[in-house]
Image (tube, rainbow over all chains, first blue to last red; front, side, top):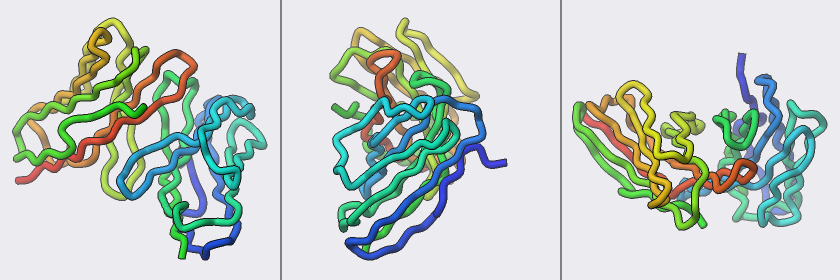
Length: 112
Length: 110
């Protein structure tokens, strides 16, 4: 039974489109995260939610909007996709910020 | 600011040892270590809290020197399965965000 699951695994789309990535965790964790890993493999936090409340909102374009319908789900919607959005997006969860984070398998987003 | 890891990359023969360093410009509350194999998600290895503790996970251990704002990961008698990119992650407080380091690519060969 997958602990943190993301869908889709691959996303290939054209510039200007809108897309969503879904994330679900069954670990009972209170905190969920979105990370972006670029081509140089740097892992950068984008957002963090604790019990459906946004607690970290990094300098990310407004085109990225997270939504947490409940503490087990954290989705990421991206409007007007640009070439620079191509990356691997990881969802993760933990009990608290100072606890181990469990990552999903990632969503590989390619913009044509 | 992102913690800096050194070396950027290292190639080892099976059975050799390696040390990966993580250095921060900020005072640290804790350091996390993760390993990411190619095409996979990062996997948690260990957390070190301030107090200079040392932790071990089989033949992988780590230390944390809060005065120097540094942590080191020690891999002894490396195995092929140790290959991957190692990331440190640092927290400056209990409620702060985890900031990942620049990464160290480790390759273990026969």
